[in-house]
Length: 219
Image (cartoon, rainbow, N blue to C red; front, side):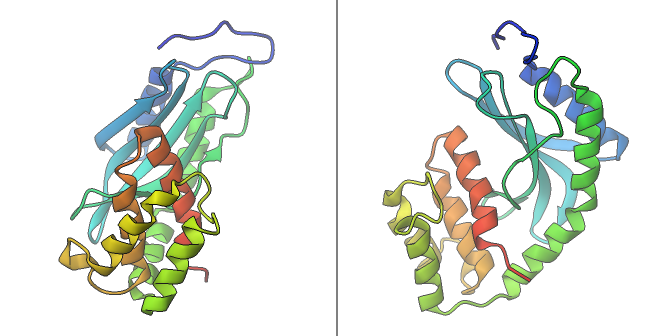
């Protein structure tokens, strides 16, 4: 991927270098990447990716989402997530958290990613607990309709096309997988992420990260 020239205040980071450093940091914690996928903007300056790990929970695998840009539009950031086995849905537990520093000349990529991976690793159990709570959080039909309505009509999920609303509705009330026939928050979350597969890769990652904040169980 092309890199712009470095300046005193901005040091471009090659996408592939970030991936390699992240894989190394995961290996130090005995975590292995079993599947990964990446998307870049047409000019090659923005990158989103997801790494599925060999750490699993009931029904899926944990993963790490990453993003980077070399056009100063966003900071290097990571987020924890998961992949659902039955439908290959990708989900994140929340939005991307920027690493501690901007792309300055004194930025230490290895140390910053190591700190972020430690934080994510310590949070994997809480993600499993969150998924359990979502499965136990039953919804009335009106509850589900209201959450879908607010997401699109009231733009609680900003940037997600409003025309996806009927697809999410259909995915929830007439799901294609038996596992999602229970009317609960877990099924509704997967109704959204199933619909998001129709988006372009960059938009899919962004929408999925926002969804984690929107439908998560508030304890």
